[in-house]
Length: 322
Image: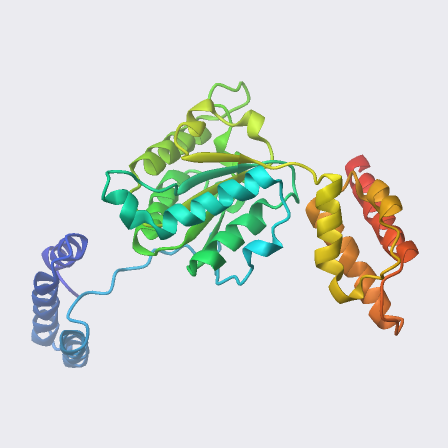
């Protein structure tokens, strides 16, 4: 077994990114194991070191154990999929433009928008926005499951947050802190617990100190309960809302595509869909398309789409009453 000093030398060399010192410490471990008769283990260690020297010449960073906390993907959603108000769309385009021209901004001592808060009711396009940003910038999307972070690691949440921000620094991408209100509530709320205050304070510190090349996005359904100190840490705050009549029209047009009937009576459909979110209207359109395909028809009728929208409204209403 390696000695305590050898283990400490390995850790220090890795933390300080001292490649040669790391190799030296690893070979000392191999020599120690050989001396104790563990020749097979000593040989394996020397082989690993020799291979590393002949390939990359540097230590591959250790990846923290964040399984279950971060879901990574490579989305392909395009900007055209977003059906939002002109103001919000313009601000999203600005985020993309600044990121793509960040070098030009840095020359003048300016930084691009990279810490964004998305606030609004469920299903209004917050998660899709994060996906579109990742797709348009051709970088991965990493979704941080805040509810799991809080419930699974209560007592060590701040330590896990530090690991997450270390990962943000090492792996460029769009990092979406979903269900952010799980930790972002007001620190002086009467029903708060000390642990959650410490977690929020840690997040405030980490996000303020972060200088990575990643985009950090926090999404919340309840902006009113967020601690006011949070808003100052974000470069931009985008407020989402239920779709307007014009947005409903664009949603239906985009989703139905070739299945849209030319004689579709949109006025009645708008009235039916007015209280639903972007996501619910999209699902209703998908339901209508599936029913049309299974019925061996070519286009979605007004009556069928209205039926699917009513079913969505009824399901939503029943869920709220439970």
